[in-house]
Length: 102
Image 1 (cartoon, rainbow, N blue to C red):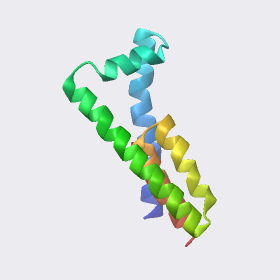
Image 2: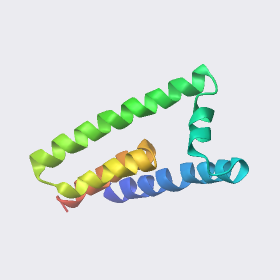
Image 3: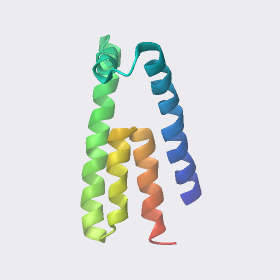
């Protein structure tokens, strides 16, 4: 399963980032304009909040479990989650979590 987690983490990094880069190439590298685009209507705002809450929940889980297990490498999932997205951070954490047992 760990290779499935790694493949999903790579896909979760590359696929969303391709959409972000396409948006930036069309609209310029203005992060605040992108945030404004995320809140263009109630549906997109709901999705942003859904992903934000999932990212916070994942981060709390990563921190608690990393401290309990003393598996500090798992903390890399937090910047991946907030820098790329939950689609990368969650499978990356699951991959890193399996390294200790391998």
